[in-house]
Length: 373
Figure 1: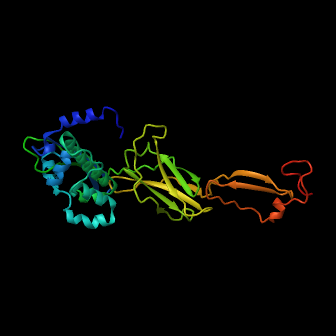
Figure 2 (figure 1 turned 90 degrees about the horizontal axis):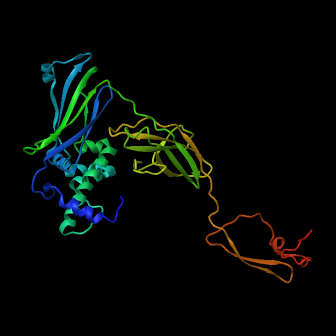
Figure 3 (figure 1 turned 180 degrees about the horizontal axis):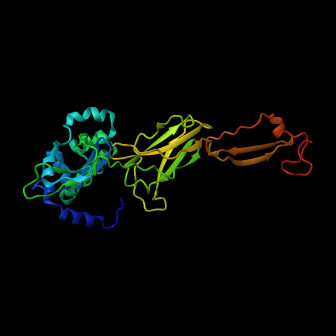
């Protein structure tokens, strides 16, 4: 986030125009939801999300209602009467799990803990500012923004979390050749409120393949692998990425990122790239890497092409500095140096006398002389 010198004016104007519901005085005037879907052939996976905090908060309290209508079967569109007959309420109360029911999920999933904290936590401030007047109103608004944003982030990273939040549903009662309209909307909207329901037209056979990540590259550093790949062909399909590594030349792979690799906003020359750095277990070992995209439907896409990396030692981190050079009466030379840090240099086993001792003083007056012949 970039702050400018006008930030205080912006906050004051924003607080002056904060809606009345911010202070709990009235219900929201509009509730808006968006929906996405993915067909697998024998099921249709649905995801939806509130578009703002008021809708998010209302949905958490009252839940969502999910409906389906069949509009086509095979090559024939259904009549209006047939569509009415096909109408079904798939679920009338899709809402977040009770607080205590989140504990088993949160014990094994950071995203579940994040979502539960956003929904039920007493406080959810990233940074605390002032606590009086307009700044207090701003803090309330900021906390609500954090709850809304972080909870939806958690839902995008885990389909199980999205289900637990009441923001996902898998319809297994679909028929081959059928075309459906799905609609989801918050329950019990306030009187007079505008409701913008989420809707989707999708067929059970409309299976769409997820794209393969492209442009994967790798460079080896000091016991590290730096990976990068293109994001342009995957932006509309994935919410995060999985990085996998093989130590047996690709026979098997293990995931190496314990946190999701996500898109970030950038306007620089590398804005079209995603990056990940991994620690290599050993030098000289061949490692094979690949990446997969993870969709908001809990389905991972195909793996990218692989890249190979061999760990190698980095350059010596320290350079010694010679402090004094002293020629001794017996013709030997004493050299003193000070390494700026822990410095280790491996040399062949050469007797010290062969390095420093001279049989006679230098004949030509040079500092190191001509040495023994």
